Amino acid sequence: MKQKEDSFLLGRLKSFKYALTGLYKLITTEDSIISQLCIGTIVMIAGWYFDISRTEWMFQILALGLVLSIEGLNTAVEKIADFIHPDYHKKIGFIKDISAGAVTFAALTAVVIGLFIYLPKIFNL
Image 1 (cartoon, helix red, strand yellow):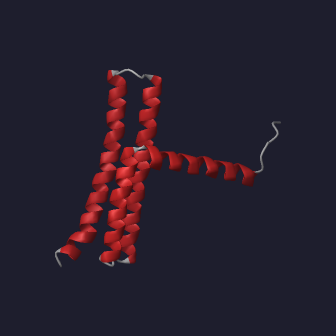
Image 2 (tube, helix red, strand yellow):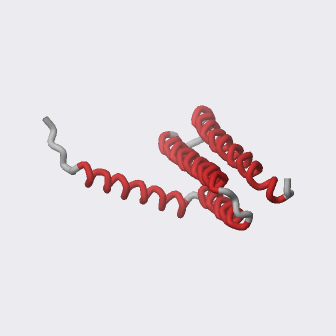
Image 3 (cartoon, helix red, strand yellow):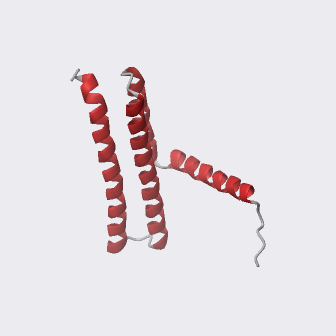
């Protein structure tokens, strides 16, 4: 039987360290993540300005988390694809387009949630 080198807790702490390292790399090197974080900051400020409800905050935070998460996965797919085949290849391009399409779904969902939250407040509907 294989011996475990790390305890359960130590293994989780190492995993958390890797996750924070990945988060740092995303927010310091990827323009798409930086752009989404800027948009997210503006939307958060709007949330305080318009005094949105707790439920609206939950939807807003969920939408932002969804977009950032899918954007991070898209970045990973693109990096793997570029590593596997650095030159242009039709199939790699197809894979990258699908991954970008997933981000678009998430972003459009976030926009719709934002419209539901903010249009009534902006236009007093």
